[in-house]
Amino acid sequence: MNGEGTSSSNSSSKKRSKQLIQCRACNCFMLSKDIDKHQKLNESTTNLSESSIQLETPKQVIQKRVNKISNTRNNKRPSSTGNYNCNNSGFINTQIALIEPNNGMTLQVRSLNNLKDETDWEKNFPMEMFGWQRRHSALVNPEMLSTICAPPRSAFAIISDDETPFTVDVVVLWPCSEIPLMQIAFPPTFIIQQTFDSSLARLQLIQSSGQPLNNILLKPEISKNETTLQEWSKLSKLDYFNYFIKCYFGNALFLINSNSTQIIYYGRKLNFKIIFKEEEKEYDEDTDIERKMKSLCKIEDESETINSSIYYPTVHRVSHLCKFKIDWNEILQLEANKDEKKNQGFSDVDDPDCLL
Image (tube, rainbow, N blue to C red; front, side, top):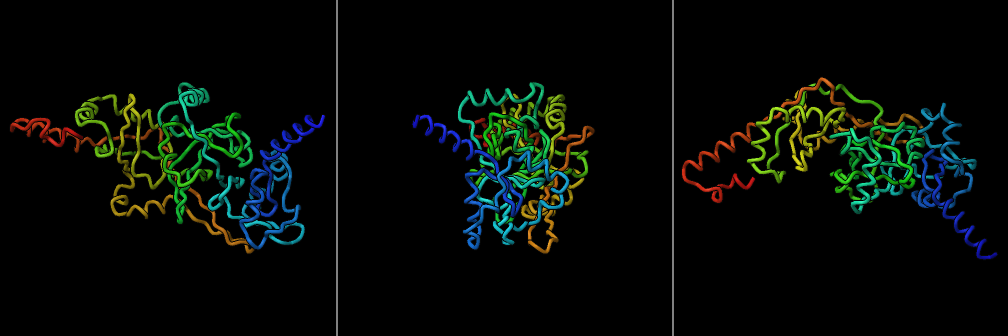
C-alpha cells in the first residue's frame, strides 16, 4: 500500500512539473519546474509570495483574458503585495524556456538523433509539401501555439543570442502532440539549428509581412558548394531549372537582411547569393551589420511602469508572380577559362578551376 502511494505521488509530481503556469507579474508562461529560476532572475525578489504565481492551465487563462491580452502583454503587473515579483526579461533575454503571449517564445531545441526520428518526422507533413516550406517547418506541442495565441502553421523569426539581437531565419511551426512542452524539433536539413549558441531557440511571432517580393536574383556561390564546375555548367543549360527554383520558393518568407540561401536539388546542396532586385543598390552600399539591424524594428514601450523593448521582424513573402533570375556569368566565365587552358595544353590536374 505504501508502495502504491509512493508511486502515485511520484507520478503526480512528475505530471505537475510538466505543467505550464503563468507568472502574474509579467504574464509569461513557463514550466512549473522552472518557476524558481524565473523568480531568481532578479536578486531583489528572492523571497516571493505564492500569490505571484497563477496555477491555472494556459487554456483557462487565455479564455479569461482573450479581450485584455493585447493591452496587458507588455506591462508588468504587481502581485497582491504591491511588489514586482520577476525580472520580466521576456523571451529575448530569458535563460529558461518561456512563452510571452502574442509576442515570442524561447524553447528547448530537441535533436533528431537517428533515421527513425527522421522517418517519423516526415509523417507529420503532407506529401505534397515541397522546397522551402518543407525545409523551414518545425514541430512544437499544440499547447505552445495556443498559449502564444498563434494558429497552426504560423511563421516565426529565429532571433540570435547576440548582444544586439537580430533575425537569423524564418520557421513555420506545425503542431505535434508527441513533442514535449516547451521544446521544438527542427528538420534534419535545417542549417540554422547547428549555429545556436545554446540549447535554446528564441522565436518571434511574425505578425505581418512587408511588400511581396516580385524580383529575385540568385548568384551561385561556388566557394561554398561541393558541386563541381561541370555540374554547375550543366545546371545553367537546363531550361526547367528556373521553374524548379520558382516552385521551390513558393510561399517562402525572406528576411530583409538575407544575403544567401540554400536549396537541395536531387540531394545536392546548392548555395546562392540572393539579391532582392528592388533593394540591389541599397544592398551594395550596406554593411553586414547594417543589414542585420534592418531585420528588426525596435519599439520602446511607452508604459511608465517598465522600460522594455519589443522587436518585430521585417519579412517579405515571395509573390506568386515573382520573377526569378539566375546569374550564371561567373560559371560561364570559369568554364570558358578552363576550356582555354585545355586548348593551351594544361591538363585538368593542373587546372585549379576543375577543383571547384
